[in-house]
Image 1 (cartoon, rainbow, N blue to C red):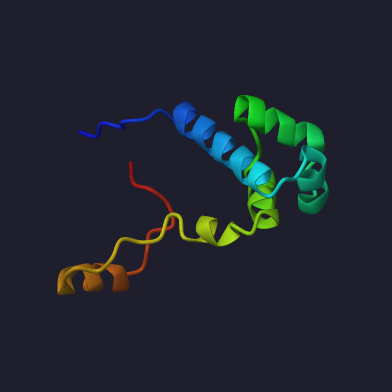
Image 2: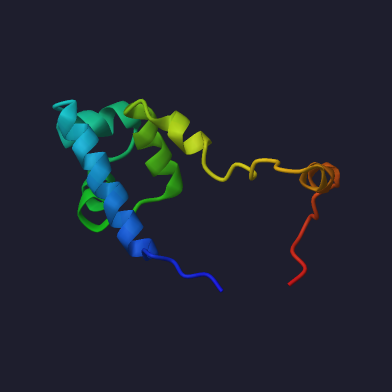
Length: 99
């Protein structure tokens, strides 16, 4: 059984707050980040206030802030810790789930 310590909403709020802090550290107005990212200012405002945004727009904002590399590191396969792990990884991944 898995117990998450934070809800998806809490994590989204944290990300929105951190993105706003990054913007303010650069002394950028919302309009500046919107222009540099290609995300509308209203979408940026909504994200900072409600933590709601599309994944594509979030990635555009991260790119404009020079932090896209952090997103590329998400969801990496777990590190290989044994020969068995390596053999399992060598097998072809299923195209769809079984449950």
